[in-house]
Length: 237
Image (cartoon, rainbow, N blue to C red; front, side):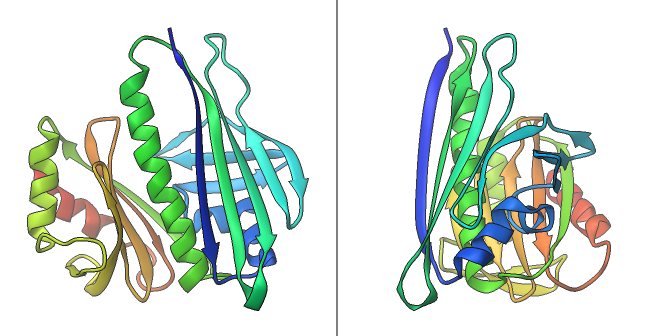
């Protein structure tokens, strides 16, 4: 049967339209808030995540610094996803950012994929807002690590929250592998985000069946991945 969807998101950020454009329309900018490694080349947005290259997303509008739109080519089963960013400068150096994600998910089991997409998009957009508010213009080192297989997700999330002191958005937490204290800037049923003075740290319920550490670091060790891998193995091994 499948499902056609449209998910709007909007925020006012303390950044210029040019800074927002750099964050959404360049590879280094996308690296700082989305996931994995990204590049914008030849009119295509390409993302590599977890050692795999995701399908390219073709740029259809690039009107700097006002609108940036790109989307996947429709698959034989009709699947596609498109992203439409609208940028509008406001008073006192602030900017309105609106993202509308739309597309089609095929099959009778689209609900689970839609839920994961919705919760993930909420985290990614919240991370974009945090980046623009606290790290705008700075390059990030993306770090991605996968934990052991998870069979009981409610228990897996309880384990993570207990490790961090059962926080809520706005609470401070200590991230042992990073050796830093940060504040929870976002949380929903399948994601958690923490901002420190040197990074944006996210935990995501991976569709592949493991907890994913998907971070963006703005300083510190060049390769902190092994520490996060060991931490996830301790929690879920």
